[in-house]
Amino acid sequence: MTLTGLKRFFGLGALLCAAALLASCSSDPNPTERVFPPAGSYGAPIGWAADGNTNAPGLLAKEGFDTLRVGDPLTIAFADVPPLSMREQHVRIPDSGVITLPYNIRVQAAGKSTGQLEQDIREAYVPKYFVNLTAIVTTEERSYIVDGEVRNPGQKPYTGESTVCRAIGAAGGFTEFANKKKVQLRRQNGQKFIINYNKAIDKSELDLPVYPNDHIIVFKSIF
Image 1: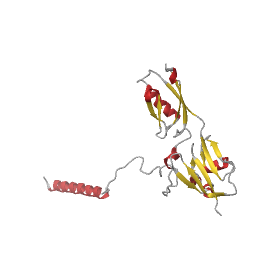
Image 2: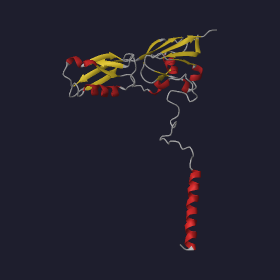
Image 3: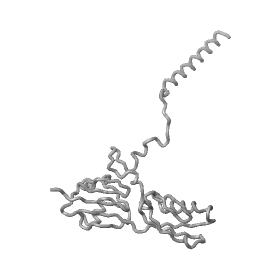
């Protein structure tokens, strides 16, 4: 190899080494796994305040009006099935959240919409028991209770999405003896929350949602 050729050879080698060194310096020494979408891109879990406040409705907040809950009374009408005894069933969702239907079929109901439950019931029966089956799920009247220092206490119909402040308004508002800073919301599952009405009326994030079978208690002020 001529002198010129050697110069070209060593010059190319030096260039390649420099490129490799530059690449190693620019790379992350502690690479992390990239996830799409990025972790935390959707913010704090639904129902929990970003500052970690546990006086929040929890995962229940993501449920919609159509979401079935423990205690809900259901009417399940069956079509396209021979047995007359199956044509209509009346059940109430138990604490387990699982309803029992003819042929000892057990289906998870709590936490689902009526449409999802209809599909799950059909899949439980077809094709194991029937060639075809149509299930129509309807909920009977839902309600919640407002007690204590309100002008019109008692059971109230649950007609759609509501909040503690709206529920108090539906109960006629506070009496002159009400402690507006200490309104208790009791869920059917045992959860309890204290709401300061004076703050919740101005900050929607503090005005917790009300669900069927909830119990709202307005305590009396201590003078």
